[in-house]
Figure 1 (tube, one colour):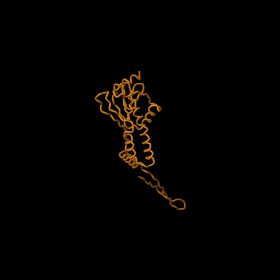
Figure 2 (cartoon, helix red, strand yellow):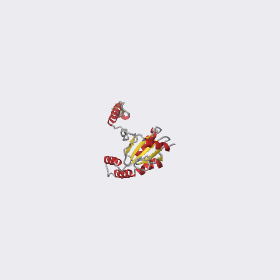
Figure 3 (cartoon, rainbow, N blue to C red):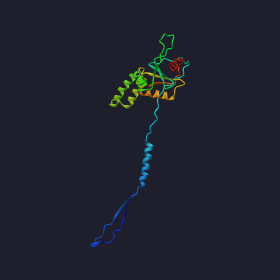
Figure 4 (tube, rainbow, N blue to C red):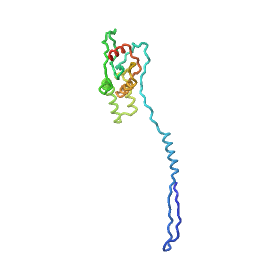
Length: 212
């Protein structure tokens, strides 16, 4: 609170005139400290703290037989192994000499570079990426509300036209590789990500031939 201190007028000056009283102002800052603490408490109690973001994963139930994997529409299977190596194949897996007479699956190799995994996912998931670009443009132009944009983007990645990525690892793969793979899938708008599926014996045998 402010306080005004008055000093005496002093006597008479020359000519018999009385001098004016001098005043000095002192501001007490103690109430301001209380107000600062009240405001700080108010903002702490009313603020919304950032919530940790998580990535949704589809963890299927383990199959009864390791060599019995249900077909996945528009599936791309990635096999992670030692030395940061990534092998993959598109579609269903057909071992050599399969009863359906299908050509045997051939593993392709890629890497974590922009010209490797990122380019592959961009090409395989082109439909979903293009659809989300259109939605993003509408959202920027205020033609689409944020809630509607998020819902429609999720619907696009869940569509059967979008790819499904299956990530399988052998006993020599690292957690870092699995995390890097999930990050790249997120960047490329791959919404259907399946992690934790055990590698089939035929897949493992074909993989071992590649890494010899």
